[in-house]
Amino acid sequence: MSNPSPQRSPRHAGGCQCGAVRFAVYGDPIKIGICHCRMCQKAVAGPFAVLAEVPKQQFAWTRGAPAAFQSSSRALRDFCAACGTPLSYRHPGGPIIELLTGAFDQPDRVPPGYAVGTESMLAWLAEIAALPGKTTSANLGPVPTEVVSFQHPDHDTEPNWRPPWTGPPAR
Ligand SMILES: [Zn+2]
Ligand SMILES: [Zn+2]
Image (spheres, rainbow, N blue to C red):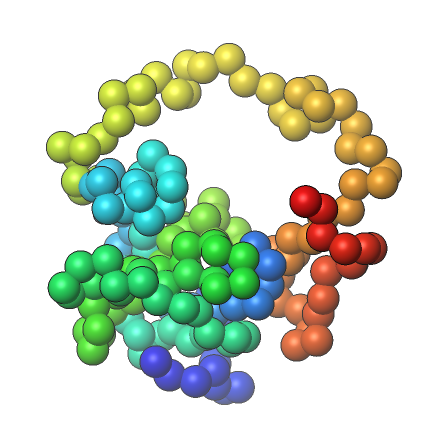
């Protein structure tokens, strides 16, 4: 994978929940799709994966580096070893990296255009737009002032960025 280049300005950026791993994309994805396959369900521990295909030449890890799990004889799935966020799918030595769009800083800018693995699509997905819903504040009320988010913000930060740590981890 190429190193970050100061001559190029990213079209998209993103990273894991804790901020240890960040990436940049220097063009628009080739294509963006939903994968309903059982391996993607398991890899994201969710109902499906949304993957944006990017040429590795237009991609760089800009902070840290992910760990990888080899999920099959031809595929690796990258994730943050510090916080566990799934980040990407790729074939070793191949020209493409597929990035999970939920990790992008602006996931609404990378909408899917097709679906694959539809034999494994969960039946209840067809109903989700009709489920009763509430905003977070309507659901939980105002966030108590003592609650502090440790999630990395949705933009690049200084290399020494750390969450606003207030004490030992809860157990
Ligand atoms: Zn992380
Ligand atoms: Zn899949």
